[in-house]
Length: 131
Length: 131
DNA sequence: TTATTTAATGTTATATTATAACAATTAACA
DNA sequence: TGTTAATTGTTATAATATAACATTAAATAA
Image (cartoon, rainbow over the protein chains, first blue to last red):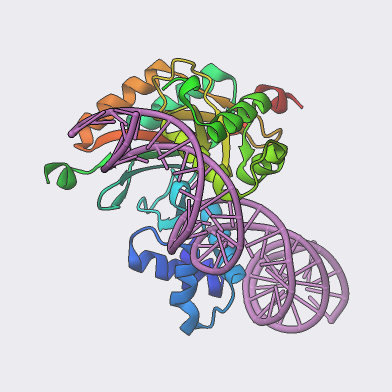
């Protein structure tokens, strides 16, 4: 699904999330797109649902926040991995080949048929560990 | 930290979570321990925080639910992995050596110092994929 | 022991996150 | 063009979580 095929609200909200470029919460999005005519939480949540579904954004579950997907071709739209610095709150999307591979073998082993996973690492980023 | 050193509320709530043996939500816990004298959400949330901190339970972030840790010796108290069936809602804790190993090498590569991760797989369990 | 500090509790109020329900509108397409 | 599916708008409310403050219990140092 291309950005061009998104609906009005979906576009407004994706544009905003891409602009801020860091995890942002639904009500904060709402607050920031009100000048564009979006008035109610549901309008935001509906767009978020769709954007997550098509892989344009990811939800950081541990933070109830949403962030634009950095993998433009988003093959991994349904397999997200993030590292989250507990000090500066920086969040980075991880795109690691070995990990995807591991997860596949894991699937075979457990007999479970996965169609999605969510992985969140917490710790100190390089910068913050120096301090 | 042993179970014996837990406080009154912590014990009540851990006992209940261990008994139900599946992910359960804070307000559901509250409802079910009211006969034991726990009256307010905060009493539950405080105990949950502590129990998560010491590794007796885990939070399933995508479900806002809590589940007892199955690894009695809980070395992996801070490294949790779950598989979640999207059909029957069954949740299993995963304890996989290869995964822990992978995560360690990953840490070295990124320069980030991790002290915790959360991994949630979604899909269909064996039973449900047959249906 | 007793003073002191730290952890846990109790309680009320409120903040934050998310969805239900229903009516209206627009887009997709047979 | 008529029909279905997707999206929107709106109000109300459900579900999840924390703030703030007073009190009590437990741990431990003098």
